[in-house]
Amino acid sequence: MSNILLGWDTMGEQKKADFMEHLYQVYQPVSHCYTGLWEQFKVEAAMHCREDYFERLEFVEEVKKELGNELCFEMT
Image (tube, rainbow, N blue to C red; front, side, top):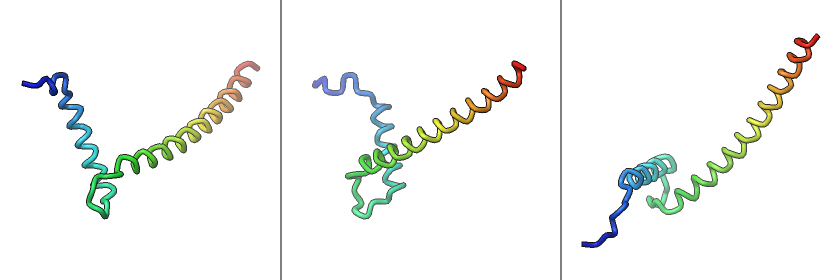
C-alpha cells in the first residue's frame, strides 16, 4: 500500500474544500467553474486588508490625541 496519505490532514483539506464551495456560492461564476475564484478572493481580501490597515492607523492616532489631551489635564 502506498504511503501517499500518511500525514494527510483530512480536516484541513475539508476546510479548503468548504471554503472553495463558499467562494463559489458568493461569486456565482458564469463559467460554472471554480477556476479563478481563489485569485479573485485574494485580490478582494488584499484591498480590504489595506483599507482596514489605514482605518486602524487613523484610529490609533485619534486615541493618541485623546490620551494626550487627558494626560495634559491630569498633570495640571
